Picture 1 (cartoon, rainbow, N blue to C red):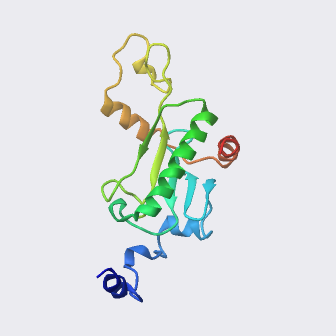
Picture 2: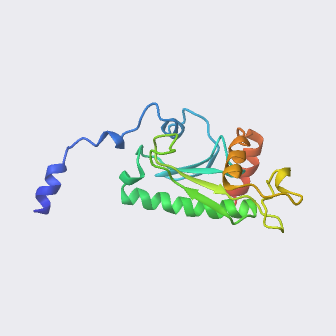
Picture 3: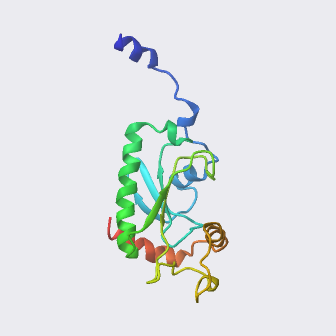
Length: 178
């Protein structure tokens, strides 16, 4: 029975989601057609600094195979991505001297690039009062702290493009710890 099932899949063309998408920004980075600040790379995975980071060190971990949905990621590739996420997260926390972070993977909803990728985002640093060091003046000096919604809005508004010199310095620190 098993040989019949295997035989049925021989010479079968791969599903279209397994092929590279020539317009996919991540596929273009993987092929070397677009520049990127590479943090880590092996034969199955690449990790790059996000060009519009939420915070310093915001890194993307991307499988090299073009797969649009996490739910369609083959287990052997998922394990390679997971290993890279862990390795890069460790190096990033050491380089930034901040062990707090978020790891996020979107599927369709809020997925800007239709190619599986994980975001590793360092969390805001907290001061002795428990407020974020990145907090605005309104949240300091006895006034009410920002709501989650206000904090998210301010974080979104504060995003800036990644500076190449900053990227080089950060890459050096992270790579030294991989």
